[in-house]
Image (cartoon, rainbow, N blue to C red; front, side):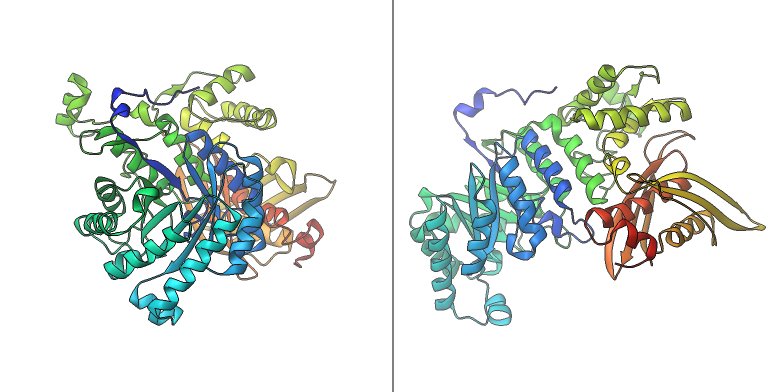
Length: 528
């Protein structure tokens, strides 16, 4: 479909910057962004197509689910290095290696906090104990795997000379990559650049390893700090799609990649990322996590290439370079409307999906094609974003769980809102009909579905947005539902916001079924 950016002559005189993506590990730790195994595999495949060098697939000791997702990714994904995280604890490292071992290119990433506040308040260890545990953890990992990364957690707040001692110990023990995290986003660019330069200058053996950085965005400086580190000699950046992650997030992959591409004069490195896949990959992560980027987000936000001021519009019409330092098409962003209609064939639809930067299996194409024809009957104009929404929808929802058969609502300023629903189990003949009243039609729908399934569902969050423009635009609804005190996320899309809301809450019910939290019988009886 798309080709990677042309390799320019500067690659002969500059060095490669390794792009280490931790969307599936640190990014998933962002509140509300957890993914199941299938979703992680989907993102991992997208990252491999994007061309990242390293995928940090998870933290296997954290849970059986995390272990299984790492093992699946290590087994199924070819191309990138598959990395897993472990504390400098023997059982952590053994568990991590067991998970990542099937990969053709495995990496063990071990970490240990080094800052004074972590040593005293969290670990209750002295400096000598920290050095000893770091040496043992790296040595154990190196016995299992030739590719070992070590991170001194909270490095940016660690005494520089002690940090250098720990790093030197890790290199001597066999680490091949040294990662310097700004764990709480505390550093400033000049400060971080100075720290990286200090380590390169004072640590013996640093020339034998890759120097990496992992910056958080608590002060909005993650990208700036990462690029400052590159100028000081770092050659790996750890980042996430859309900058998702703990608290305020991580360094944003798309921003780093385009900064390197756009400012070659200041950043003497190159990357192997196919930039035309940045926007599709961003949208995929948004759809799976339910966490949308703000409109003015750099590179992948809806306004990133929009111009409203008259003087800006005039300048762009004369010469795009007056106000655009990047081209929208270079990051895979498109504005055009779709000219296909409901009579268009599968081949034309697949070709257009691929032009948008997405890939679908034959089974997924069948579902998208069917939904496309339904949408064409409802809408006058179908835009690229409509197709994108269909592709990113829950393509397996129609094959398992419960589906919405019919929905009827009544509401008004002088009427009590009511909803009547009919849902059917996809793999059986079970049909359930129910009705409920509520504080508005959407609340009534939620209550009717809860009554039909017998589940105690509590809505924690409800978001709705327009997918495209116009009065017949599709609505995307994302809900967060609490079941047994645990949060679960669902997504629904329709030209009818009420129907989209019903689909979103059924998506939660089906997610519970797929995660084996409840069975179809339990979904009717209300037991878990």
